[in-house]
Image 1 (cartoon, rainbow, N blue to C red):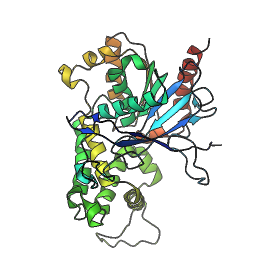
Image 2: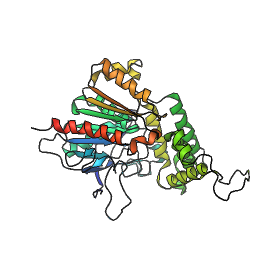
Image 3: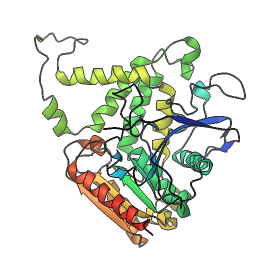
Image 4: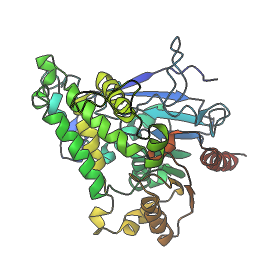
Length: 376
């Protein structure tokens, strides 16, 4: 059974300097917390979200039985990250469309909706904003920072930006930077959005339109990359929809996989903001902590003090195990404490959200050990 979650928000009047050289002020961060901070303040776990997720990590909203948090199978009472033992914090990143200040909100300097004028944000900016929220919540040092995919990049960045402020980093299905292929997928998705006639240069709000066609295509492209070939073949194969004759039409949905992708695209276009999609995929593209060290990830990670758990999945071709092993090798070069699990799972990148027994067991065991550290 899931517990009742309560969304919260916190306003920050002071300006937050951004990596771009710009800043943002009078912004709000949406967040949720689960469990209780212990008297010593040693049991806080920050969970960082991926592209289309939010601060609603676990539990359900009262009166909304189908409102489970996106990692509800992982976090909660008696679950691998046990909220009977840990105080878990989920934060919605700046620029998102799920409650934190983003392109849909008004710019305090002009009174106009930001739209395309919302400042560029990076993984490092999100981490700095999260640190400010933790200050307000009275959390000095974190037991762990945890995330999957883009969330894993944030967990990794925490170890570099605030090395003394965390004891463990749990990085799942992630990478130290995007490959050129990954950047290419993001760019094709972005082009689908910006070339939609309803996009209006990112100021579609004032025109009363939504670039749904672009969002649908962007989601379809993304969804293909999250699934493995095996899963797609098993779920859909080459099945034609029942009762469909071969029409050779450009518009008709004939294959089951086409129906599934269009459904996912339609659903996504109803709730996700186009400018947010552009911002977050760019943040993914920009993340590269080794860049300032001539490409040496080992040098970049030399400042890290946390202990690490890294998890990858064999069929994840978007964030392949090879990319997690790059992080492992760089940490070992620095003689850091690293645990690594490569899970043989058929689900592709989406595996980090699913109930694989071995995966859940690895995370549970790791957090059991963290809890043991806190025993007097």
